[in-house]
Each structure stands twice: as C-alpha cells, then as structure tokens.
Image (cartoon, rainbow, N blue to C red; front, side):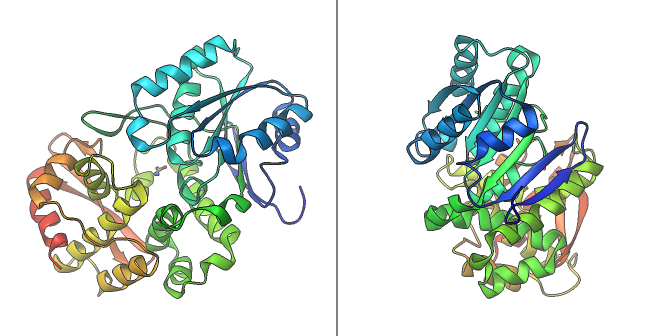
Length: 356
Ligand code: GLY
C-alpha cells in the first residue's frame, strides 16, 4: 500500500485489516482484489451516499475483475428496521450471491449495521467488507463486527456479530461531510479520548483535529481493535465502548430517532460525567471539561427529556441484565470503569446528570 495509507490489523479469528487514508474508495477494487480476489460483490448503500460514491466504487471493483450488483435504500436511522433488512436480503438472493461472495457496506453507521447484519444471516453468513464514508463509521462502527437493526422497543435490539473481512476508510470522504454529520463522529472519538486517550481528547479540546483526520481515526481504531481482540463478544471490557450510550440510546429513542446517534451519545456522555462527579465516582472535576469539549465540537451536553422518560427508555436497552444495568463511569479523562447498579438506582443517577 502507498505510504499515505496506514493499516491496522485486528487480530480476531479470522484477522482483518483496516486501511486508512486518501483515495481508497476509487482504488477499492485493487485493494480488495489483493485481499479476497475477484468475486461477486453486492454493494449496499443509502440514498445520500449513492450519488456521491457508488459509481466510483462500482467502476473500481469492475475494473479489478469483480462482478458488481448494487442496492440503494432510503437513508436514515428510522429505516434501520426489518423492512429494509428484508429488502437487502431479497436483493442478495435476486442477485444470486453465493456463499463465496461478499457484501460491501458503503456508507455510515446505519449502512454498516444493516448491510453487515444482512451478510451475517444471508445463507447463514457470507463475508462483508466495510467502506465507511462518515467519521462515525470510520472511528467506531465499521470496526468490531457489531451489526444490528432497531426494534420498536429500542435501538440495535436484533443483530449478529460479524467481523468484517476488510475495512477501507477513505479519509477524502470526510472533507465533504456536513458539519453536523462530522460532529456526530467527533462524539465517538471524544468518547474514545475519555475512555483511554487524553491526548486524543485534547486534540478535540484544542480544535486541531481537522488537520489530521487520518490520525484521529487511526488512534480510535487502534484502541478499539485492542478491546475487540480481548473481548470480541462484549462479555466484559468491550462494554467500556458503551460510554455515554445508555443515556444516549435512551435520548435517541425518546426523540423518535430525530436526534442522531453521535449527538445523543455526546449528551449521554455529558450527563453520565456530571452524575459521576456529583455522586463522588469521578476522581476530580471532569464534567465541565467534557461538556466544554463537546460544545466546542458542535455537540449537545444535555437533553430535554425527563429522568423518568430516559430511564424507561434505557431499561429497554440490551445493557440490562436481570435487575442490574452496567454503566460506564468516567473517573478521569482517559480512565473509565464499569459499574453494575440496581435498575432502581438508574433514575436518580440520570437525574443527577441532568441537573446543570
Ligand atoms: N460501538 C461499540 C462497540 O462496537 O462495541
């Protein structure tokens, strides 16, 4: 690969490579040919990404010897449901994909989740490559193998673990992202900073990140790869990656998914940081630093829903086991811990975090 492309190996079984750098979509055929050989590639994308990148991706694949079928679904979290999944599965069957073929998820988090889920259950599982086009998909959702759709009862309640066969992360896509879509991904990267990387966090505090998006993505992917290698199926350490997500998912559900994932996670992160500080779980004042960093990056630090509504939504989430829920508590910037609390304690914790 050229020097400008950074590669990170994720040592799951089987292992796969995440390539990060400019121009990767236009060269995806060449890269994927060297990784998986030419085969029938079913490219799944949404109605926003298709006009931007689908032709270039299909042309690159075809010129590298792949046969290509494409499917475009209506963009947006409200479409991350059974109907869209079923359309994708019918498309794969109509295109006669076989067990040796592959799905390419071209787009953001919703596309990665749904195309990945379809690949994971079509013919009981075929391969999937992830071609993230948003910062959120690049720093988080394209790596690690979680796939899902939303159910009426909550977000990501049905899905499978399917590690991608490869991830090609074209940093040129980031330049044309609308500011709020970029901010959505910044939320997940700031989350990574709070979890384990104070230097990464400080890049967002200083506002210097725009100069080096490849570096930001690589730091996030390297950290996530390590966590996924140690705990692929989220039995322990991987739960840390849900920092901000218990309240974040509840905010998304309470807003009928009109608040995007990253914005909801940002608010969830600010709320749990305030709660951690007020309840004496943090080791010092962190909440105002986290809130200032989120605000600087165009992200919210609170939500207009009651503690009662958020608690009810959070308890539908899959993070609950029996009568306890596991929360991720920030102790310092760069250090968090898992805390199992009785579900009865969740509402006062959220209430403490909502109070500004
Ligand atoms: N986005 C959290 C995880 O992949 O575990």
